[in-house]
Image (cartoon, rainbow, N blue to C red; front, side, top):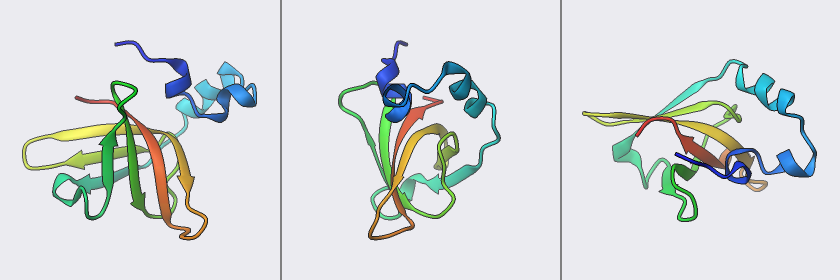
Length: 107
């Protein structure tokens, strides 16, 4: 599976000339797992595959302390899907509502 680095790395990676060492150090930091249930897709959260890239998704939800490198777990009765948050932005009007770019860690 091949990914375009511009799609996987945070949007400001190339603009701010972040070093690869910085990216690696962020990758080994601890992360939280935020759990959602598939039956709530469209109610509590919105998860959509990105049409321009395989394995990348956009998710909108609400909650505090959701950060890049955190994991999203979406589960139903028979399967569990994990995603990593590549980039997240909180809305200005609603401080707990966010939109994030995710990469699938499991099929």
